[in-house]
Amino acid sequence: MGSYRSIPQVDDLDLSALTINEVNLSEVPDDEKLAEELQLQEVLMSSMMSIETVTKPSCDVCYKANEVDADDRKMKQPIEHPQSVTEIGQSSRAPPVVEEFDCSICMESKPLFESFNMRSCSHKFCKSCLSQYVAASIQENVTSIRCPGLQCMDGVLELELCQPILSKDVFDQWSDMLCESMIKTKFYCPYGECSFLMEGDEGGGEVVTKSECPSCHRLFCARCRVPWHEGIGCEEFQQLGEGERGREDLMLRELATRLQWQRCPKCKIYVEKTEGCRFMKCRCGHCFCYVCSSSMAPDEHNCYKCMR
Image 1 (cartoon, rainbow, N blue to C red):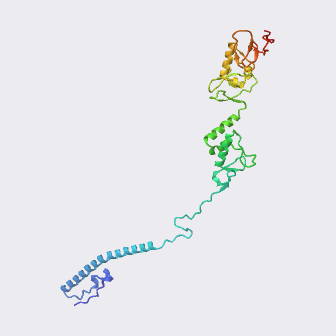
Image 2 (image 1 turned 120 degrees about the vertical axis):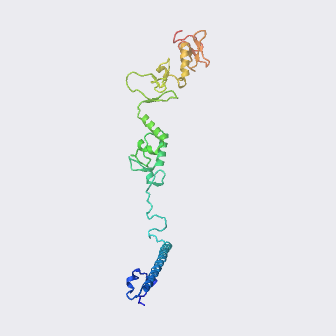
């Protein structure tokens, strides 16, 4: 028989080592030995291929298992945090510092963004206190509102700068008061349900008496500042008492003038003579002349003023 090389072990899988050239076939004398050699090589080749197909997947599985084990070990390791963070979830940035100031009205510390800075002086107040201060001043009919600072003589509040901190009602009321303060000669419509603001005429020309309100379109006396007193002049009207200037009083006066009624010079009541002389004795006891309203003695029926 011929000589052969030793067959490598299965663990030393090296296909390049099992080639036909490495078998010494020169000493094989016949075809029978050659067939045996070929048969042996086929068996070796088939066994090696079957071992390769079985062992390779098992190695892949082991490799993947090793990867999973490594991941598990990483997950089980304790979490290391930076030394600058004391608790999980907290930011390393320090909270912002909120600047504060002291309001001299409420005497409390307030955030700086709630302050109202005076432009005409160096004082500052919280917006809530200053808005209440302005509202209280408007209720007292004060149009020029000064700085509420103690002994401050320079600070004056301005309407435009205070608008953001004021309510609409207070702002509108302050605006109207400032407009009215700029009118030198002003008066209102004498009719209570109108009260329209008007400006008087300061010219030295003709005095205007009978006028019409531009709002309610009713007549009034611009000189007396009352509803129009028809049938009576301004001088005579101004001599009337406060309780005699009403519309009904003026209508009664006009009726008395038309019917020639006379008025008692003492109690101011109207009387009408139906018959007799001009001597009249009022129910208040006063005696007077029915023609000229001059006083008369109770026992004399002749008027020395009109000689009747």
